[in-house]
Image: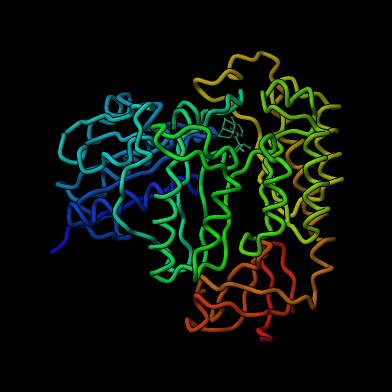
Length: 434
Ligand code: 5AD
Ligand code: SF4
């Protein structure tokens, strides 16, 4: 009988892919199968995120809960970004944890499994050419890492300290991985990196051809049987015209762009070390919309960064009103260890921060209601990938709208034209018309 692995994944798509990589290694090399039942697991992994403050005590209380429920012989491993920055402290505070594996050390999962109390968190470790075994949680969409780490030094962000410097994965490895996934039936690729459009700046050795992100997109789009390419996250600073033109004119690239604004105030952007101004951001949106009018644009916004005045916040609101984003991920600033901004003293009052966040979110909801009202009766090409329990099947349009129709698993992995018949804030209902 195979051993059982219970894995909880928090955080971003990068973490989800890291979990897939760990599952792949544990299946192929160690004979594990995944389970949803903690009590029957022989190995329990938590793949943590530390980008915003998830109180550390929450991690420890969760670990305590796992320790009580687990089989006596089961091992517990803490992985991901919080593992990277807390390291040994995790084992000191929770001695029943068997190993700690950082976000930059995923390929060492088999190794740490067999060494009690191992702590592998080296952020200079280079696994950009490691050949992971194949495992994907979706048969329809393949997540593929194109780089590891991040070279930026945004003052609020812990990621460069948990995932290290940026190293691109050689394009031939990416293309081979993509071909394998498409060969197994995935029609969509989802390329992942902290800063995808900085791809190609540094490889682990100089024997690799210096391909940039635009060229990588061109090469990938030639794969036969591949229908769609998505990616996250691009950085507004690196959105040159060549990239935007390729995005607009390459029919396999989905017309949905994530453009993390963070703040609309040039002064705050400078404090954040984002490398662009409000005007540059708006200029890139205008360029993008001029060559690709159908594009949907999503963003990340941080409110109440240290020193953010009412006037600075008003600049963010101004950008929101001008751009009318299709989706926002908005957060209150949270000071993170090992970042520059944690030492900034001009902290914004908690109440002001909450008010700003709720104002911003209600403005976004108003914008979305207005936009959504115009979608009724429109027809979108949908790629179906999720079976819901209530007799619906859901998928995404090219420009990232989520649509569901009545149907069964026959629709999974298929493209259909869907006409919108009912509007919801996050999901539209429709009927298949062709
Ligand atoms: N506080 C609040 N939000 C943060 N993010 C990253 N670091 C912080 C922080 N310290 C947000 C940014 C980023 C997203 C992934 O998380 O908006 O784009
Ligand atoms: Fe963090 Fe900035 Fe890198 Fe994004 S680009 S991961 S916000 S340092």
